[in-house]
Image (cartoon, rainbow, N blue to C red; front, side):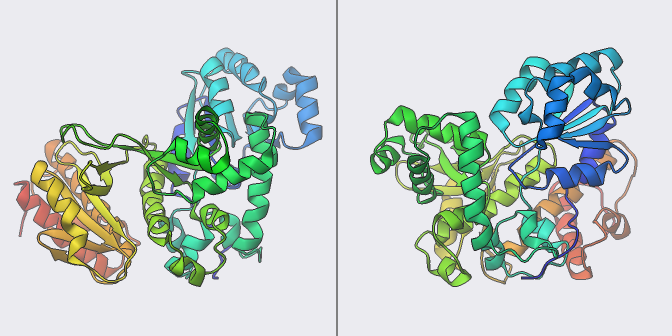
Length: 449
């Protein structure tokens, strides 16, 4: 496994920009997703305290006013959930000074912290969620891991650090045990952690499937209300998330239960007992794991851009299905996600069906192969290239805005190229240039051939 010293996070510029506008930034996310590192690297001149340290925590609890008076220029307060009352004191000091860039709080328990923020810091804080590394963040730093290695390893930065030799099968059992003993018990006093771990494994075995509370309850010997409550714990502590069905303006026969995914495929693989890429490729759930991995990348991109989760799926009572739908005003984007390395014409059937119901929709198949092609006007995209289409759309939208605001009158190749991030190679830049020009012609925009 190739490792690196420092990985640039896509949220870095955004957090700096927002801290110049808000008095408080609350940076949340799973344990060890890189919150502390991001905070320190983004604000190297800001003081730092960690409330995980018993001495620091006890001093803050014993004399909160004295604690805050030590940091008139602002401070990073790590693991803020260890002193819940701190939010009330932050409110007081923010209301007294009301200037941007005062406090950067971090924490890893979404439910508890958001509850405190809604009570005390509403309107004063900006909430950002930092998830584990995306595949883009990994590949951008020339970490030469195979796709299968990355799916198996997940996205926790420690697994890609040159200073550690830890392997996924060493890291994740300890991570999961710590999660059970600390985070779960702080959110809810679970009487049997052994039963909760069985429940967690049962959820892993149903990744990418419709959530069926009764089925999970039968497997674990638990009531439906308990299963519903425990799933909310997994969501609050960044273990799982759900993707809701999309049925607006489609038809009345759509499935309306959500599907369940894990925030990190490394955690998922560990719970499923997968220890190698060979185990992974042969596992009966590999298709669902691969789908989870791809959808995670879309989720992380939305989080890093400060957007709310805007991901859906489609399935009707007759079995027509779309793995991922992203709503767009000018036509929803439909993705079919396939773990096969070989294209099959059946991959496009779902997209063709839903495009017949909604002609303005755009569709693409993301698969594990190497070749980019088209089949019946539907893009077939290798997983390594699925960001290509988002890049094309981003460049097009920038140019569209410039035209609408009359910053430019005519678009030529040089101008389009100037909008493409410099780190992309010449081949990719040429492909983006052609795709943007094609899109502009379709949209009847001014372009110099």
